[in-house]
Length: 521
Image 1 (tube, rainbow, N blue to C red):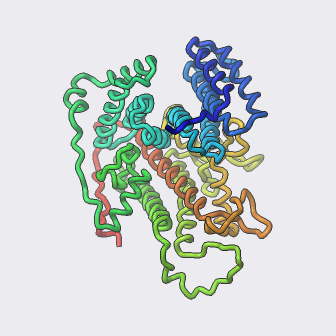
Image 2 (cartoon, rainbow, N blue to C red):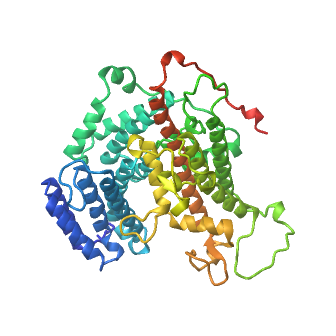
Image 3 (spheres, rainbow, N blue to C red):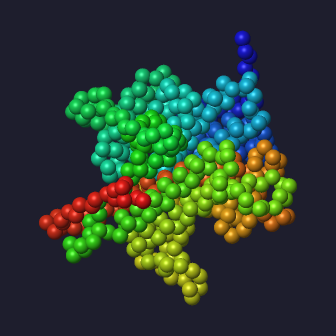
């Protein structure tokens, strides 16, 4: 019989128990005291074996925020300001992420540690997903809930939280068919969690409250019945392989592809902007539909380039023959396939600023065209000195959870989290600048023993392996997909507000037809 060893020192168990007791007793002063002690301890103990302490810190900051206590102690059991909430969320996110980074290190990769690592992952994934959900980031949260179920399909806390998250998600999307699916799956996960023995009593009461939010009539007539899910052909072998790849990586522009189930009816880019109310004098469809068409098509093209780069490459492409490149003996990757991957990354990154252009126009922010980008839309004005100007309007995040989610995505590239030395997605930002303006040399993994550049090397190249470039591009596909879904939800929320200001008798409908597949030649 195989023996397993706990890699985590006794001090981790000791502090975990103390945090649990303090939390159960609602002893806020003790929680803050323990946080100070553990943070001081970790400044001098950075080994991966202390990963559980980072989980404790993230969970404790989350508990303080949930119960209305500021992390500094300045606010006691009251309504926290948005700045206080954000500060707490930043600490939570940082500590959960750092814990996961430590769990991925070679130091903790031994087979004898596996049950302990697995157990901690289940807890970190669940609580990290909860923190992302509190940032408004529904799609990102679903990724980590799915990760929990891939490890343990019957983990009750994850099931309950998935159900809760799907309820929130369904309230934000405008497609009525998608709403029905999300509610049905939400109800299924919530009901399942109530039968699990690993769900603590307070969580079970909350999940039961979420179940009871549905009326008896809706439960009996719809939610309790078996959901009829149609099966669709995914095409011939080549198309089927591509669509299954997109489904598996949850990359379709379709909120239903955030569900853990990889069903054929989800294999479509059905995402669209919601109905819009315009002046009765306007006879043309709003230009935003055309803008969104372009955003979708560019994303889809980049996604396909990434797919091609990750699944092809056994034979030299005919366009790569007789190109007469010089062998520099540093084993670079030169091919149409790799250039396609680099193109995908650049194009995906450019979509952030294109969405910002749409946001500036739709919300009438009044940012000068040369100043529009995904960083400036969150400000109140731009420039300095005599060149400073105020915006006509400002994005209000408290009134639009989807805009809040977009803001937190922007933070990934531009804001440090907790004790982090740089923004979480800083490497992608550095890579984008290098691809656009400098020289990037992509190396075969097996032949490259160097590390990814944080800055240009002595040879004036930014060096990166193909696997790291692919991973960055896949990460960017996920983030940009979330960014586009959030955009549709943000406009849906705004349109509901605007429609309330129109006289109903003056509203007429204008149907919009789809661009047929046969026209895409």
